Length: 265
Image (cartoon, rainbow, N blue to C red; front, top):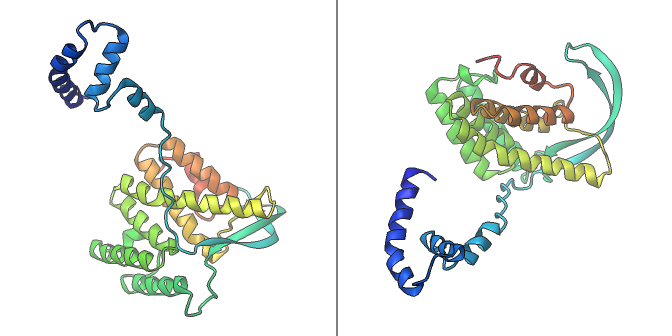
């Protein structure tokens, strides 16, 4: 309890005490005091306060990602590499790719349309290097506004969320980046788990090689950086390990963060 809360409780106690003592002239038992405390917190009784505290919290609403889904792509043999880039024994693992149910490049394929529009805007603002620090602040602001607009047009546009989260990290707005990216990343993990379960696959990849998965990898990386900016190292490392399980070849660099989380500080 902070000072302001203590002051407020004292005022409530002062206001309620005379009437309460009139109702309970022999008050003094623990149960009597509990009833009074409950009233200072706005509850009609101590029982009501206990029930309110024991009521399970409402789950956070799942982000609306439109028709985004994980498509099962089958089982493939994957060339694997160690952290030094040396080849390892290939593995046969099932995999999936993020996308929508629309036919690619059809009129219904809004995801491809907004992706193309955003790519063209990025190129016109200074190239497609992928490094946000290359953009002037004014260009970054314009692109963030466009990304926000396009994610409203097509909620499955994960690259739009990734760009916004990355820009927030660059600006040092780590909590805002976390609040944007975290529920989306969690929702995608649920989709991946559901797809693997439906296909009865214990091991399941989301390869960076698949273009549809790359925005997810970028968004997860932005979330890791947001966690690190907030000094939530355990969350950052846990997410890195989750991403490595989905794609051990690690085109983003999660393994380097695990080795030294604050190497760039």
